[in-house]
Length: 428
Image (cartoon, rainbow, N blue to C red; front, side, top):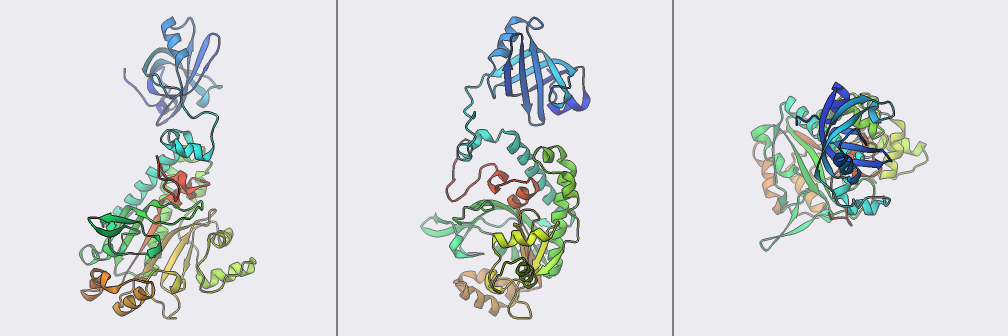
């Protein structure tokens, strides 16, 4: 047989088609068997009529179980009652594998579906999310390659913390206590004198016991670091990247987005420039909304979501208090804030990007390290970047699952990744 994908049945409308895939649904009537067959491209209805096919073929169709893998050949016919307006009138049926009774039935509780995630990933919802996810990764790579960045890889097993030490995953390493990476950044900065413009797509790990809808303990991040730029230029890179992702996904995943409940036109509107306000201005907006936040406190989820009720495009919030940000961020002239920024997504209000200009003042970095509980001696390799040819530079990290959650209109971030890892979930 010369097989075609199911979406080609609807696009090319051939007189006959040979397809293969998995049984999504099956229904038997007196003289007919209806089989909804799916492959990675879509779903099509196939029918087998008693008397029009050999009895052996009809009995095979009757015996099909959910998720059985089959090959079908038949005539393509228009039928407005069928999904997509066309069906395949089956003539030949080859059962590649007759599946056992599929465990996913009436029980669609969240915990059960997480327990059988290896099977639930076949669902229409998750399969379409994974297609969008693949396109998001493609868009990130395209954008940075187009802009002249080099892809650079730094280690996952580290001896120094980039962010807060309280969220480190400790591991045993030949008698040493090390941890999994929270960010590539410290090692990435060492590559700037060699490559100047670098990016990566990498997993990251944070031992947060949070049970919110926007936290994972293992997630993927797109990170960038660039020499000779400040935080304003890096904020421009951030908004250009987000816009590029949205434009590409909207244009190339229209079918998947519609199935997930997202109007592609929403994403096409995500064009630069994005609105920008300072942290202090954000507090003033929240105060008018009846939410008082003491200056110096980080913005919580509820405050970020309230803030985003005022914006239809991603919002860039700048100049946060230095006490709530990482030690490496450059201090502003006011001595109270840093030259950093967060990008908040519309609708969800979630922070999808965090970035900053990096401090080049070695004594300031040592001081901030001590204040955050770090030992400057353990960061000597990092401080060498300030001793030998230091230049202004900046970077950011983009949380890929949070972007996918926003784009796909997902209630929970765990559906933005195939096998989510949370404080209580580590299998399958």
